[in-house]
Each structure stands twice: as C-alpha cells, then as structure tokens.
Image 1: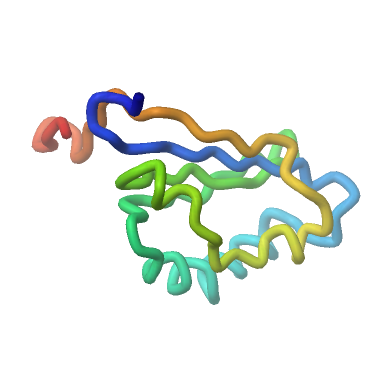
Image 2: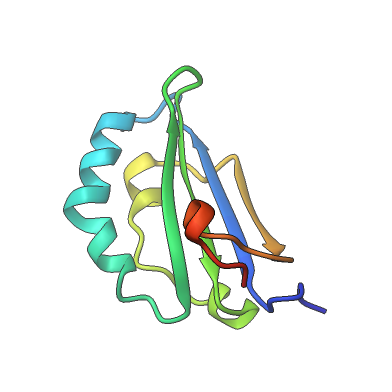
Length: 107
C-alpha cells in the first residue's frame, strides 16, 4: 500500500570519488541539459538536485505522483557521465508533503 498521498519519493546519491566529473561539472550538466529533460517527464511532481562538496557527493531527490510514474525510464545521463552507479538509489512512500513555507499547503 502506498502512503496517504499515493506519491513516491526517490533519492539518488553518488560519491564522485574516482569520477572525471565534479560537482561543478554536474551543476553545468543540470543547468544545460537535465532541468529541461526532466521538466518533460510525466508524473514527476518535483526534482531537486543536491550536492555536498565536503564529502564530494552529488545526487537528487524526486517526488512522483505515483509508484507507476517512479518506475519509468528517465532522461538522465548522470550514470554515463559519472561512470559508476550511485551509492544510494532508493524509493519511499510519501506520507505527506508541505510546500511554500508558511503560505504552503499540505497534500
């Protein structure tokens, strides 16, 4: 059974050690290519790209409208660019969401 909202969250996290890519080169990839590609993915409600320079990690958090949407192939070249699989790639049920600070709404 899915969470109360029926939504899914995905977390993908890479350790960039040993990769030719850096957080800066991946930021350029996100701005030049990935944002536009992911804006066209059906059922994707939200995507946030994240990084941690201290640990040399980079990744993303995605919010999906359904488990079915979360299972579709994605327009990402991150695996190809980084050269190895993420150290974490997991999906979770979403029990509730909140957007927009004090003006936001729960879904």
